[in-house]
Length: 273
Image 1: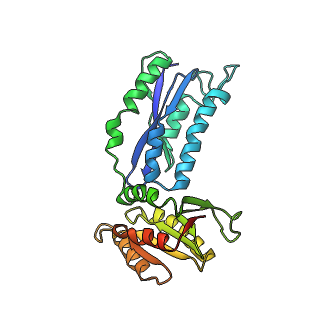
Image 2 (image 1 turned 60 degrees about the horizontal axis):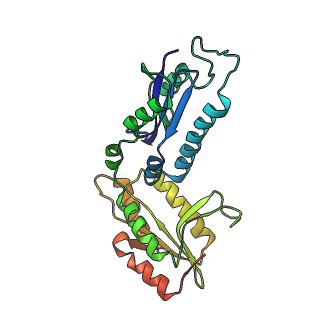
Image 3 (image 1 turned 90 degrees about the vertical axis):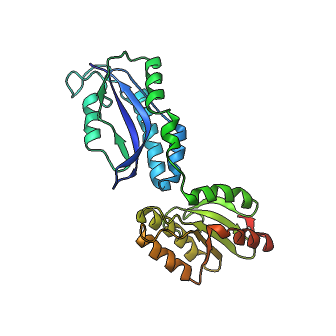
């Protein structure tokens, strides 16, 4: 059985095919090595929605689990002729996955390589294909994410940051929700950042989270935080931006005016909830 490697990537944009390499699999169908980059996994958190990141994290861990605990066929019987004893991690199956990859995770086509299956060899290949920082550095955070990273520490004494809710907290919450800023004085105070340069699908998800909590906490003070997207590049997002600024039930705050929220929190003695 020949040795092969395959690179596992997270698909950032299914339409354009943009993706980021996360992990490396090296196998000969009998022995396999797999690992992924924790820093790259953290990086994509600012580029995809939370549910997709959660799925990718679980998928990566499941591969490791399959290799270490499940994919050992002691009888060396396999439905793939001459593929080694591993029923799951073998070249024909990885070839199949590379052809019929999903829109979230993508395997590259297996590449034959004339090396022995050894930890040192795997580490060398992992360093070459995954750990090169030049690739990671080329991926820039969005303006919204940069602002959030700077603003959250400033208001941590007034708000719970990126707090999650389920129907256990509020029975009216249909699906799990994450709110960027959550505090309370005489009323609940909530704030949600919307990155309007994201794909429309992601904006819908982020706004649905906010809308669920806004409907549950009707008397709360509500802040929507965003920035004007380029009209020519993001026409639908620009229309949405215009509409949310007109809503009287929300206070729209541009990312350049975040002091408004900070001042409000201090003046009204808002506390994390």
